[in-house]
Image 1: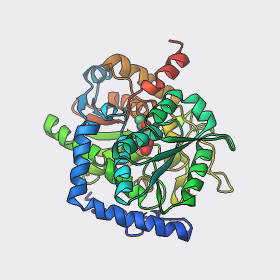
Image 2: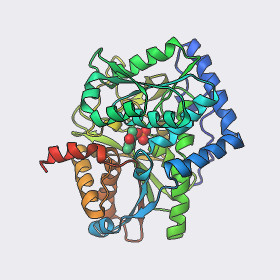
Image 3: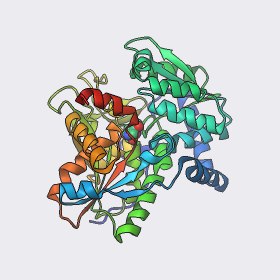
Image 4: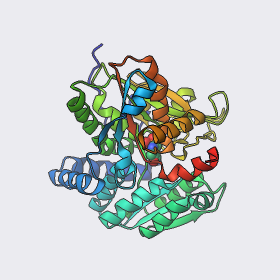
Length: 399
Ligand SMILES: *Cc1c(COP(=O)(O)O)cnc(C)c1O
């Protein structure tokens, strides 16, 4: 079947019926300014040059494409390849869009970059990018998370960002979002809110995707050079969906390439403890945009859960919602248990300790590969490294 070219999003920020800007009018004018500034730098040769320089000399791009030979032979069946985003500076894909957002903030003459963080991964990547670009950074984090995520808290302090401890409510991610957003609304002219995934009101889903797109462009060229053809299937974990959109975008027009996003099934899809938004959610409005989300009968976001803190978001990027509806991308799930198995198996068969988030995509590949032919291939986006999760997994497994 020939897919029509998909210009996404439209001028109002919609991917089909998803995305858009469901925000108060005063914020709409601010978002429109960000959109205009972004479109201007996106087409500027000077900006693209600066971004490419930083991608190669600072992040360490291109990240390698690695054939997981021992893992593939152990499973028997499709051969598995890993796009090594875990080898980026700061250890994950998030630095790709944080540098873009920091450069945009600087270009717009903003005096401060604001954001929330849950486990601290977005906070560290953003604090890093702001130190690099030379712009003040303020991160809001729940007190409970501050106590849990000590190494990331220390890193953010060393990197010079202002850390705001949020004690209201349950003192976790949602309260941090509310707190950071209130701080932003006090002065949206001089500050910018740096969203950590392909979510939020337009232009963020488009902009973060564009900054992540380099992952798929590199992987596609690397795979072709190595194998002389495209992969049978590509896969990535989906929280908000940025590392997945980064990989998928370059392959959307390759009709023969199967694309699969993997959501966290937590304790199981038949329990309340999961974050399988596309698998079990329904369309609604959340955090200023329309997407599938997990909500109760009154339309309030449900508490979500995953062993990987980077995946427990009750919404998902609007382009994923569109790609699900038109059936260009399939969405599967992996449980906590499958994730832990994949975490240990990849560590012991390849000497690569994956982030628990990325281990969901590895788990999917491990489940599927045995039933596929030896001539078939699966390309997995290894979105980050697992140093941050090592102590937790060791304690959990009694190592
Ligand atoms: C934050 C994070 C994710 C989830 O975010 P997406 O926007 O869905 O990519 C995945 N992997 C790692 C390593 C992360 O740090």
